Length: 100
Image 1 (cartoon, rainbow, N blue to C red):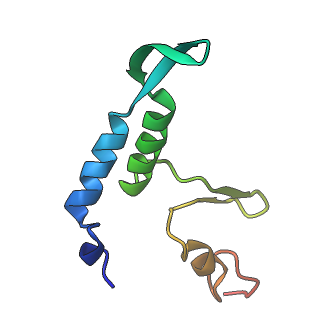
Image 2: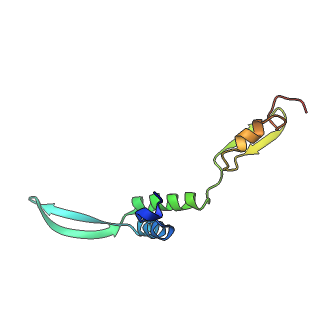
Image 3: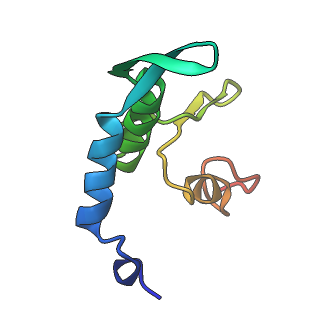
């Protein structure tokens, strides 16, 4: 079953993301077990999580992997592509053990 059929279209997911970036929470004060006051405040923790998610989805983070091989002067900076490591270690690649 496709996500669209479950109500998770691109537009619906974007609306949920925007809702998360605007998250609020209610603080309550109680006295003798009864709620005496309520206050709506910004839910910073939830907003931070949704911002992190949005940045990841948009690919806006710097690559996390940095590898330095000082013996040959090779510096590899992670590209964010899952197959980059395989390409580096492939036969004839910069980190292969083959002479070429």
